[in-house]
Image (cartoon, rainbow, N blue to C red; front, side, top):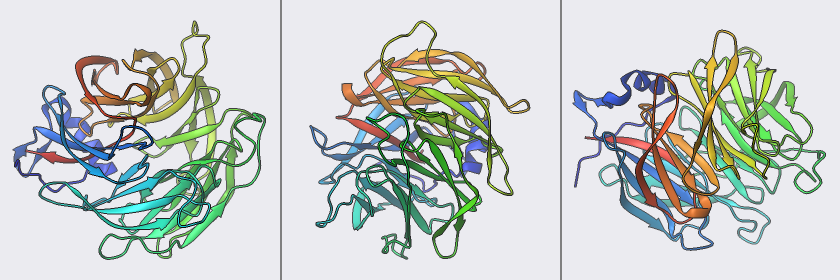
Length: 391
C-alpha cells in the first residue's frame, strides 16, 4: 500500500500550492505524485455510496481506491482541516420519523484513507445539499434546500457531531413559481477568519449574511442581513477570491455570475457586475451549478447544465472585472459540481447524468482547459473533494 501523507490543504495553502503548479506538491521534502479525492453521489440508482480515487499529478489518470457503502445520498462532502474527518449530507426528506435530512460524520483512516462511520445528526430540514467545516474544525454547517434553512453542529473530540447548536430559517419567495415558491437554502460558506457565513437562498433570490459565533456555534444576522439578487436569478453557490475581498455567486436559474466586492470588516457585499455563463448563440434550456476560483485568483470557472460546459473567465482583482475567456465541453451531461486540484493543474467535472468524472488540464497562464482523455466511471457523481497528497 502506498503511504499517504497526512496533510489537508487550507485556503492559505491553496495560494502556496498554486505557485507550485504543474511541478506538483512538495511535502516534507518529497514531491507528491498523486492526490486523493472523495466523490459524493446520489444512491437512488447504481451508486453504492462515497467513492475514493487517486489522481496522478503527471498524467491526470484517475484510479479507483475504494468505496464506502451503505451511505444514503451522500451528495455533498466536506473534510476537516486536519483531514482526519469527513462529513456528508444525506440528501433525503425524512430522517428518524421527522421531515429532515441528516449529516453523517466519518473518521478517515490515516493510512488507508478508508471511512468509518462515527454518527449521524438530523440536519433540521429536508434535502440538505451542502456541508461546510469551519477553519478550526470545531463546527459543521449545513444548508437544507427543502427546509429553506441552515444549521450548525459542534464537532466532538472524536470527530462525531453533537446536536445542533443553531438553525436559521429563511423566509419569502420570488418570481419563479415553479422553483421559488418558498426559501431554498443551497449553500453556506465561511470566510477563512470564521467571522462571517454566507448562504445562497435560491428561493428568495438573496444571499444571507451572518456573523458566526466561533465559540458557541451561533449565527447572528449581519448588518445588512442579506444582499438581493435579480428577481428570478436563483443564487445557488458562492466562492471567495483568495484575497477574500471579492465573492462570486453562481445564479442557477438565469445562468449568470454576480461578482461582489466584500467589506472584510462588516461582511457586507456590494454587487459589481453580473455576467452570463452562456455563449451568445446558445438558446436551449440551462441551469448553472457550481463555481470555483483558480488557486492564484486569476480565473473563475462555472458549470452549465444544458449547455454542458465549463464557462471560463479571467478576473482582474485590481478592477474587480470578469472577462469571458470561453467555454469547454464537459464531455458528459449535467456537470453538477467540479473541482480544481490544489496545485491548479487539473480541473475535474462530475457529470451527473452520464456517470463520469472527466479530467481537464488547466493552462495556468490563459485559463483554458484541455481534455486529457482521462476519466472515471462513477454512478451519479455530484461532489468532488480533494483530500491529501500521496508520495
